[in-house]
Image (cartoon, rainbow, N blue to C red; front, top):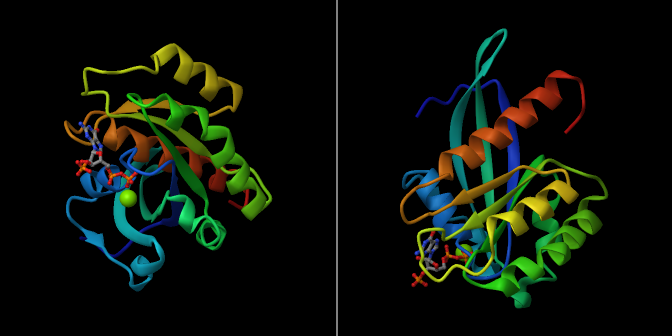
Length: 182
Ligand code: G3D
Ligand code: MG
């Protein structure tokens, strides 16, 4: 992997336990999944470059993706992982409604920790499973309400996985180029 890049962003991955956060990050980063020493207290990060097309030519974006433990026992520790994030993924499991209902709580937790709005992508994961209960229209409605894009994914088949990170990287680069300090 090339070590040169034009932009570096920290991304946090939020959502209940077992929605597929680790599976998404692992799938995207093709095995370049680095376990941090902080794993014991519930976090690890992966690093991956994505190329974005701009009017001015291609730019390389390095994403440092923090996979934060979703279990409630780690709640007290999570805010410190949120600090300094430029963007995030809000992930739920389309087969478990509870993971969708609690998304507002994840947003609150993030905003309390960082005191500002950052670009997020709503990720509806596990679309490969037959027992889906949360419909696309519901996901779209939540995403529209919060001004974020909505992407359906399956870490199992790979559907949507690259889109998630490509989309977020494009938004982050566009903001940075406009002079916003994200
Ligand atoms: P988390 O990091 O959010 O806690 P994990 O979730 O990535 O550990 O995933 C939890 C379980 O869901 C795992 O199953 C994982 O394989 C499965 N999973 C994740 N994403 C998908 C998906 O898109 N489709 C399907 N079918 N399964 C998925 P196990 O059995 O290993 O616990
Ligand atoms: Mg995990």
